[in-house]
Image (tube, rainbow, N blue to C red; front, side, top):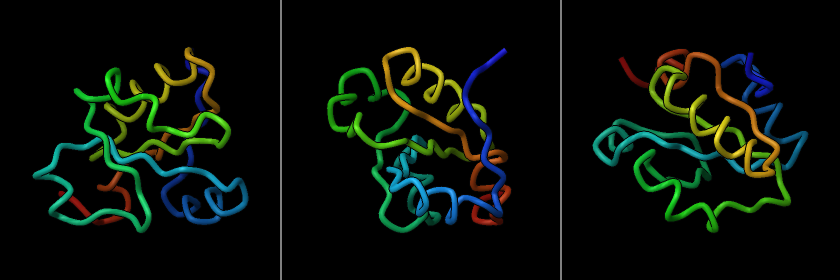
Length: 99
């Protein structure tokens, strides 16, 4: 069982603000063109390992993707490497920002 918290879509903004979190969008560039959350750090899943140093480890990280699957994998990877992470439950679909 994962120890990564699932943040309900309707609570992402409050959760992030209260914690001063980084929002990490791990979708692919063509998906980012459909819209994304304000102030996000964009690193696609395939680039996480080589770009992990760009993610501030002193702040919680809310990981986002289309539906929550890829973001959970990345959140678990980051958590295993010492980051405090959470997953946006249902991803951008849950926010109505992607089909």
